[in-house]
Amino acid sequence: MTLRYDQDRRRIICRWEEPTRIVIDKREGTIKRSRSISVKVSETGKLNSKDSARHSDHPMYRHISNFNSKLNKMNFFPLKHEGYRCSVCGSEHNVNPHFDVSGQNIIWLCRAHQRSSPKIDA
Image: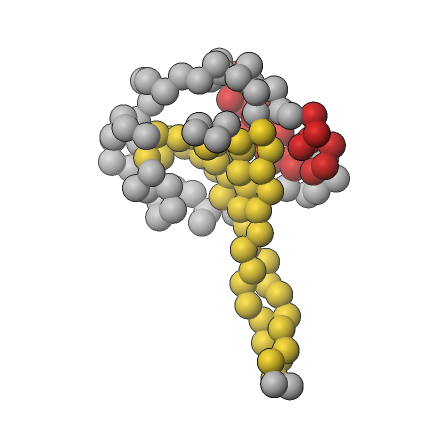
């Protein structure tokens, strides 16, 4: 599962894979289906009430809420792009926060490393 804040769209995006059973020509198998939910975040760091109401019963929503509260505790909002470096390569360009669910901490990754970082559960 990956959890990141997209600064361009101002959304927290949660992606995960789940096994899905399929049948093709009477043969059964399973595939990994990619799923995602996203919640819009205001300039002040508040989660959108309509998105929150829609996803509040979803099991992944608690991770989104926890990630948002950690960003608020860091005084990340309104958008603060400077001062953060990618934890893999050290770049300061296009760095976005990602949430490590197992360690409950925030990892900063550039666009080049956000999909292939060894530091997040991809």
